[in-house]
Image (cartoon, rainbow, N blue to C red; front, side):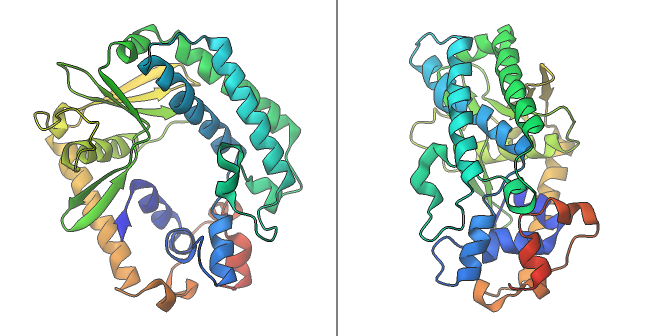
Length: 310
């Protein structure tokens, strides 16, 4: 089992949801139920989807331009975002997720699947208009962050969306920071983009996990030497693109101890629930359901769970 901060949050919210997403769902499974669970895991809320649009444009358009020292304007960024938005919206509107032979990866960056198409009455136009406006606003705010743009320009390496894996107390931990900024003489900066108006109380925990992963993983070949930096020296920035605010975090010894304890306790609870059994030996009934109804309403696997088919 590989532990991640997102899996731990899902497990805490609903063990059965975690089972469907992280254990039972399988893209290559001959079992049609397991394959359906994999496809259901691709569903997103409109807010999560528009956040992913922003993440993709930053990682695939802005960062490569900065690295290659090519000038890119805000209008160009918005143009890329709008094109990607429209193409993914067209895919989501067709909702061919369960058509025979459909393979999401074949559509590449144009693929999208929305929760409201599977469980609602369609895509609410008012939410789409809001999502468009918020994508534009997020990119506008990013371009206005002069100090942050200078950090990007002065970096010696910019690494977006790179998986990092390390071992903690015998547990394999996986983390994927939105962006790692390496500089010549300063500690690395880990950036987490946020595209929402509400706060996340545990952002420090997510960023602490990223810092641990960066300093303890087997470095990728294109990483500079990071052995001279400790976890506590890594700079952490939560960039709230809709609030137009950068929130910086520091990880001291107390926070590090809390993060390590959380990982160990969470992974142990997951491991005890699975009990060393393989996926084929487990069933949904082995896992507790959510304690509040709201979790079910937004769950990708609601029909399977309620129908008792897995």
